[in-house]
Length: 230
Image (tube, rainbow, N blue to C red; front, side, top):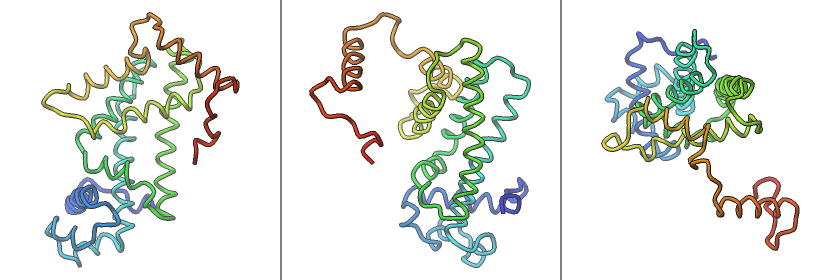
């Protein structure tokens, strides 16, 4: 199915439909939006819409699959010939930010409607998301192997990075915030070095001590559920 539904650059009408569909889903939510809403927004007839997809689920799939495919393909192109692990990490972050800042509606749909996708579409989108995650994990491991990162759990590090950059579209203000390249550099430095100036503070030491006590069961408070309370 993936090969059959990968978007051709020449298909401008489908691109037009997906753009408007993302705007409608971002505004009303997937459940609250209707095909008629998308028809009104895109000014494409219902029959014209159904020529490209047979259901709202298929439309959501096309938006998500196209978005992740675009992000991954552009990242692979930008990484070609770049050997420095730190530069590769910066490219990863900038590439992600470039897409999310240029496509805020699609970004909101990716972040808020991931669970709305049903099988078999969910499985196909999950597969390309895993490829993206594995590439990010590879970059981080290269960085750690070169001594550019501390020895911490790579999975936690990479998912923490995505947690930081996935929600930029919710607060980014082009009037006061830097462009994607400068913003990516700042976030890369925050990710690699933190925001402290290298001097330990009493607050940080107290936090570390409290966390240690909680982990050993010596603190007076209750423990966090091992599954995060879920």
